[in-house]
Image (tube, rainbow, N blue to C red; front, side, top):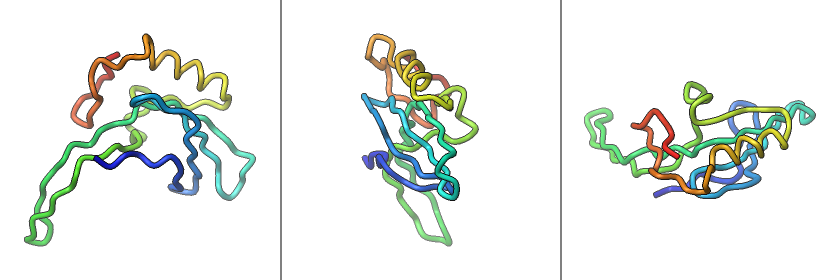
Amino acid sequence: METLVPVFNKSGWHFEQLKRVGQVAIYKRTNIENPTVIYFETIYIVIQKEKVTRIAGNVVKFASQEIYPSSEQFGLFGKCCVSLEKAEQYYREFTVGNVLQQTITSDSMSPLI
């Protein structure tokens, strides 16, 4: 399975992983054009299952991979805030007992902790 990279750029933002245990991570999100704009995101890393599809008549297989929660999944799989302290608080809440009972997949719509 392909793991979520710790540093990446997307939609004008630079993401840097600060902390991760299992499927819970904190990312620092910095605006590329204005680096003084910074947010912190505490997330459950979603596992996208392997899938096979047909594209232009060809069968294409996509391996399972870890993905950053989509905008629609935030609130359930992620929290955004302006302070690292608040992100750490969410991190502690997300890792209650430090054990995730079940892998969170793109098919499941509620985190099980």
